[in-house]
Length: 104
Image (cartoon, rainbow, N blue to C red):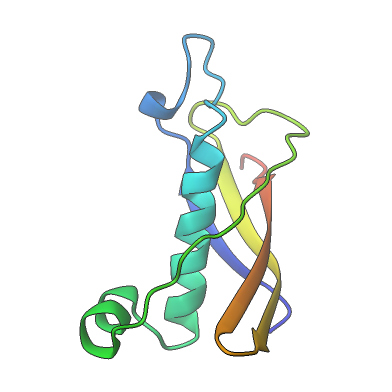
């Protein structure tokens, strides 16, 4: 898989008084992308946890902010790389891009 996209629209509650998104909300949108990637690969988080006793733990996260997202923008969460490495446990590395979709 080269990439997977998910869409999110910036809600009023995710912004400050000037309509700019609060920085921590980007990580929530990355989770939306991760869940949609798993769904596209045929996995469901709920079933993985309840039936397979398998949990995905976020061990590290970082974000570089290049431009603010604003209220009511439609954003594309793009997963640009996905690698599964095996050792004594599986490690899933995911990289994201968050892009504003042009208004039509």
